[in-house]
Image (cartoon, rainbow, N blue to C red; front, top):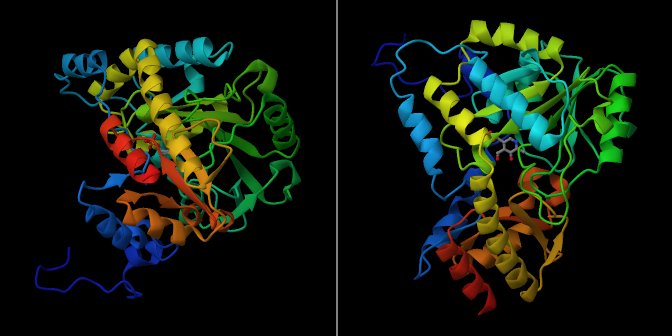
Length: 382
Ligand SMILES: Cc1ncc(COP(=O)(O)O)c(C=O)c1O
């Protein structure tokens, strides 16, 4: 350990292995939003922060109760989770997603899905010469994961037009962050077939699946998509959005037992355990659809109000048929839009955070309270 009198190594120091890893990563984009956040916060009636998709409504009572009831958990939890957790996951996938024939070996608990996205390429043993593909407009952590493993990140418009050489991992994200776009069953099935033909592992990030507004999102686990076999296919789900549990870190992967078995082995050595009270809370959350329906109603109302107000102010909304975001443009550089809205005290995310193709869009999250959304609507309509 460095002595307390030593100054911290400069980020450029070749002697610091930590800096060598961080140098592989893209700039943390949110720092660039800080001046606009300060401008928005100066509004007399306070900031309306629509830049991040973090839940703001209460954790449902039955989930809190399950967490509290499991508070006396002195022993280590297991990485594979309790049998009750795996039952809850397979039961939910069959009931809610239409999956069939799932067993416990098809389930892997996750400490929130972000760690999985960031570390999957590394845990799969990918490295230089391997390629990891994800949508042209995407959640930035897919790229981070490729870079952490020293694999090559590749973006696509249509995954089946990718060059399969060296391609080891293909991310799908439906419904999409940031666009809210949903991929239909036929397109998903075609992509599964293509990935199998080329021996590419397909991992579908489905963390917004229960948040469809104009269309019903479909899981890759559905038999008409995966052909009744999970070979080469994994779906990732999260409790963060559907159950307001981002603070608990509760998620899971479901699919190919060989892939998940290998990951389980590695993650056991790495100590990637979901805390026991969070496992119990997840069981309660997956067994209840009523709180999801109530939360959906809140989001639907906020979405409708914001959509109308944005359109009234000259914005065009593209995709956005699902997820927690409106993907909006006024056909101008996204930072101009961010600056303009910050003067109204409304903070949104610039589309170029999600890829160059988003440079004329902003992502407007509807994860703010009813009171804050009403304030944003008043300001947009003024
Ligand atoms: C597409 C996508 N995947 C994964 C995550 C990570 O969610 P969590 O780590 O809370 O499960 C997010 C969070 O916003 C996301 O938008």
